[in-house]
Image (cartoon, rainbow, N blue to C red; front, side, top):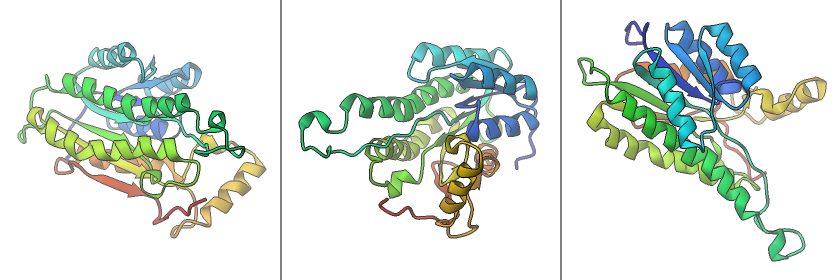
Length: 261
């Protein structure tokens, strides 16, 4: 939107090998940005990097050394202008088991893992990326970079079994405004996208998958379909490139409000 030329600048996209991250990486590359795809899937990540002229880095977002190595790789291709955090995992588990035994309650280690990846991993990449951005020369507004994080409508409409997932994604929502306020000191903006039901590889492929996705789409207010990853990427680009967007959490969900189950 701002009409700037981003050639010679770099970006990091976590979870960039598929789904939301893949679409975002492709869009950023089309804007002239060198994109570092941070993911655990080396085959898909390397193939995408070759396709868009970017770089793949195998990155576990729960490992700070991996996070730093990813940002340093981006810096080797130019000043880090953007970071988009799409890495995350889902979870489905009831809090209390059917047999009423303590041992069948929600596995606490599983809860910790979901929070570690979805919330702490997002914050770790944000703090390291923002540190690198703070070294950039500011533009006329004093801006040095921009970050987009990814939550979910489950942060607001969490369903039965989504306790860990919703808690982790709710944390990403709550990070947004204080991060924007905190990072204003170094000229870095932060916004968050809350996707609804987006058509990504998580739903599988084939006739049964397509029928399942069509059924899910009926619950969306309008348009009555799953969202496309490119629609997430389009919003991510607006948040990255519009210099007056800051501290916002925006749903992209076709007006869906998730039922309890």
